[in-house]
Image 1 (cartoon, one colour):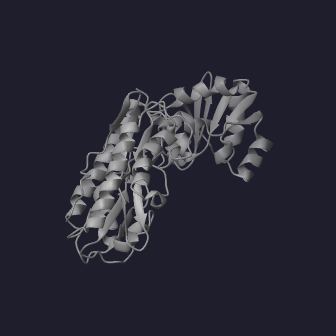
Image 2 (spheres, one colour):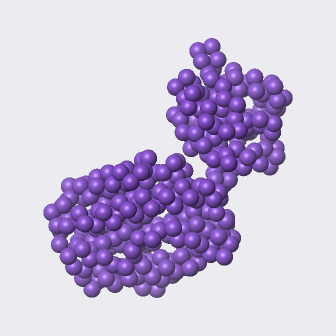
Image 3 (cartoon, helix red, strand yellow):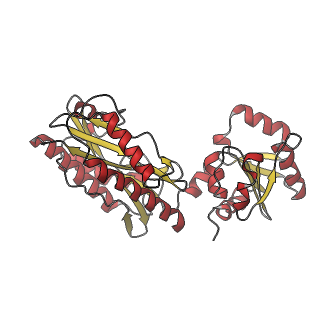
Length: 356
């Protein structure tokens, strides 16, 4: 079984009226080939696929299935070798990643490539939005790794420990459990800092009575996980419990509404209504969720303004929150795989309020 998506991308050729597709960005190159590298170009044609890279990656690249591997060199640069493929396959129109190509790189392509360049916009991202079963399995594993780290870190959260120290422990424990990297720099914020949705871990020491919000994830075999949990240290006031309950109910409402075939705004609206009805609508300033996969943020999203229909196999976050500046904030986040009749929640960590 090929662990790449070259056949799915080949489907864009006829749809876009192109003879070949030039894939240059690291994320889309990995999607096409299943091979991670800092250098390389993939070319997909109707008859064959090609992967060009340099000496550093050429031996390792032999593992790529369904691609002819070609090494670039001092007198064999990428564009000259691509032109040989263009000539061999009589390519007249070649698609390229205009949304991920710099102005200078585009000028080089215009000057050196012997075919008409056709921008494909977000077409590759839209193909990526529906995950294959093997991609979903990698994301389940990534999610499980993050949850194992969370369970271990709970025992370390106490008054006197800093936000930075907890963030470091999360990273260490995800790597120890098999992660290849973090999905993003972890967010660990406590007390008044927890009202900042994307606050940066600081030297602030956690105090008795604080909420601590932790948002983190890891990369496993090229695919991301993402989760957020908010816990209380020592005790939680009535207001803290109230806000937590509202956020949890909002998340549950969004999860019930989450399914393939509906616009993202419908899913967002189900969660947002719970928060609006409770009188905290102005304190929920972001969307219910975003897609994730090879990148931590991918389209489409489940936000108030997103009219794109969510496809079968999309993997989205479910992360409503309420943020009270100068007081505290609460966010709870799971990850969902969308199906025609609902969704599968691949996050199993406890969501009832934890008081440590």
